[in-house]
Image (cartoon, rainbow, N blue to C red; front, side, top):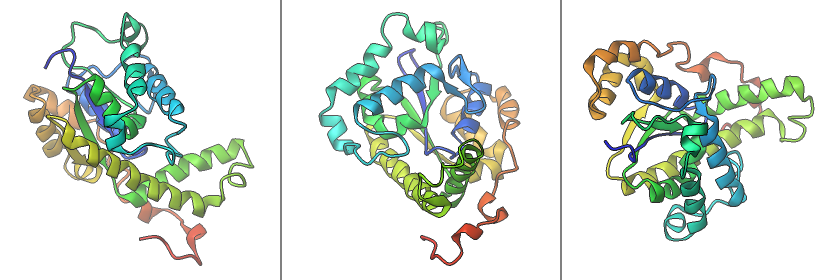
Length: 251
């Protein structure tokens, strides 16, 4: 792989993209400097993708104005140019921390999932790695982040329709992310898809498969598999969802 072939981790927020990024780092892939721990997001790449969505009138939580995947491929040259300009000169070295001597590099930012066609236009040889997770757990995990916001902002739910509305919104949002990614992946020469639940169920097997796909040394597999957490399987079945009582849960 040449330095112009980044590995891009994509997936809905709270789908295990951070865990996958840690695995890639242990496999010897440079995933950025100045990381936003524990999310494993490069501040530089977060800025690039967030500003691109801003130009489209969207956020990752509210992508209703987002153009379709075919339209992003056919039009919106200025979004691709915005991304291309961010990588010119010394910006990646200064903010992303990319070392030109490292052949394998990439980044993780779930926002990229929504505008993957624009990144494909800039990096036609990029390799997306898609991780997906059960929609119930994705929704609950995002809701738990909201609960942390509520501690500091008592009006958070009053302004966002309550926990049940947020839960159903995050369920639909997860499906929207997955559908956008699945529609975009066939345009890439190479891509890889893995289940969050499969990684947690058998880390060594799944990390081995991923390492072989990326042609990584076998001796790195044990340390990469060791970063996997076993505590988040079936989180949906382990928490009080009384806020959904009296309402029919969306299938």
